[in-house]
Image (cartoon, rainbow, N blue to C red):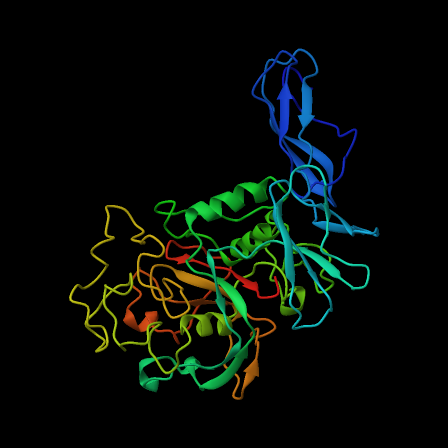
Amino acid sequence: MSFDCLARIEVIDEGSGYALPPTVTISGGGGSNAAAVALVLDGSVKRVFVSVPGSGYTGFPRVVIDPPPPAPIPTTLAIRMAQTPQLVLQAETGVQMLLQWTDALRFTNQWITITNVALGSNAVLLQDFGATQAEKRFYRAVPPVPATMALIPAGAFTMGNCMDPSEGGSDELPLHSVYVSAFYMDKCEVTRMQWDEVYVWATNHGYSFDNVGSGKATNHPVHTVCWYDAVKWCNARSEKEGRVPAYYTSATQTKVYRTERRDVLCDWVKWNVGYRLPTEAEWEKAARGGSSGHRFPWANVETITHSQANYYSEADYAYDISPTRDYHPSFITSNLPFTSPVGYFAPNGFGLSDMAGNVAEWCWDWYGSYAGGSESDPTGPYWGFNRMLRGGSFWFHSANLSRTACRAIMGQQFAFFEVGFRSVLPKNQ
């Protein structure tokens, strides 16, 4: 102390396990209004700086540094050999798990579900009474695929502008064949309610975000989230459900990406586990709904109106035949953004809504030119300067930008009210 104010705080025990600076609480000592901030390096509190000295202190105040948030509990499955196999399962409280078995480990093997179990704070002991001494069984514990996701089957499609080349940018060509492995995709854009649920869990488990996210209502898409936010949210969603996360802080893939801004590269990603952003190829295959050679996510017509999507209608394009122009009249309110509830419009052939309009959607890829030949599960350039957006939005994004082949870019650090996202999950999850 100096005179009647707080001048310095010394750290006696640095602690460990801190991913973010903890809250510092100052009380007692006869004074008030002092405040301090902690400096964290390598998981420990190295220093505490007095940010506001306060006044009226006649003795030493009590300084409390909050403990680090609990680390997510990894899902573990242990097998005890007995006449009847005993399986010990543990994960985060509230996590739902499917306990499954198969008789061979092959890429195409069929996993058979024994039971669906909700985990509490203690490990759960289960027995496989269907197993016999003569057979061989392999076991795994996996979370069920949410009913809010749709299966996008494996197969090749033609990527790029398949209509008049003059109606799109040169970067939508050349047309090329792309094979995409099967995956699940959110049927709707991530809502404000979904975002908040994972966000609250994440910030209590060592995650930090650039933006808190916004939304017109709980059933409208979340918006004003940057690419970094979306990627970390996908990781948090994985860990919250007991899945292995997809994104890491380096090519060693040992430290989960939870904090700061990191320009995650292709080899920092475990592509076959956890929630993640779709690649551009995955997004376009999903948006086409199983059909090819069409301008929009629907296959019955090559035109667009406000009955099909929430977009900004203009008379500049022959295929924009909406009888109402400008913003969608059903969603104009006194305040921006003019988003619509997710799932308001008819889905495409894969059961996906809002693949045209509402909010533009972050994709994984760095921006770059298309390859000239056929590809299989492309992940875009290894490095770049901007990330991809797809789908157009309500905000001065005309029919042209709502086309399935249209490509938009934005710096990954930016967050605007016309940009949101949806996530994907590998099929083997």
